[in-house]
Length: 257
Ligand SMILES: N[C@@H](CCC(=O)N[C@@H](CS)C(=O)NCC(=O)O)C(=O)O
Image (cartoon, rainbow, N blue to C red; front, side, top):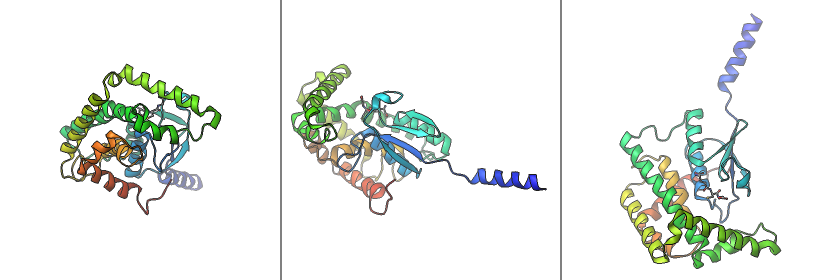
């Protein structure tokens, strides 16, 4: 019967049709990779989950649902927050790199994620925007899209904004040595947790490795010189982890979106 046949064809086509690629909305890359640890985390996760995506560059986090980047556009929806986005993609694409983890490993991954996102992140912000050595690079490289006459004002406004943010968050109330001591503790804990295994959960590449790469690559693989980078370089396994991730996920032969 003609109708039944065309219905069957439509049904079959529907089953086969892939969802449109996700659009990753993020700040433009600087130094060849995303300078936002959260955006680099998400881009790394999309690559490790093998989810097709395209990139839309934005300098307007204020136009996003939560006033921050990254976001994604997926089937007409604009979704904010790297972790919310990963949960959404796991649910809608049926892809979960963490499926093999035990309840205890999931708990450990969450604790590690909080260390990266709720503490080390602020150390990175301090090392870039406040510490004079890092600020030199940021002042030079982060404002190239701002018209030259506006650059000095843009630098002052943004640097003040980050100083205020760090004060409200709390890290900015410590002196340089105290901040660096805390950074050293974070890095030592991460290094001890990674040990001699290739990935944070062992042999298996999971979401926490995308989180870790987003942050560690933004310390170790970027030209922001300073004590934070020198401290991190003292942990050979963290350096090796970054190099393995970089080669495996972004290396030669991996297509750019
Ligand atoms: N929880 C968010 C954090 C994102 C975030 O902090 N993004 C920063 C850049 S690293 C941002 O957009 N800041 C812009 C602003 O605060 O105006 C996530 O996981 O995506």
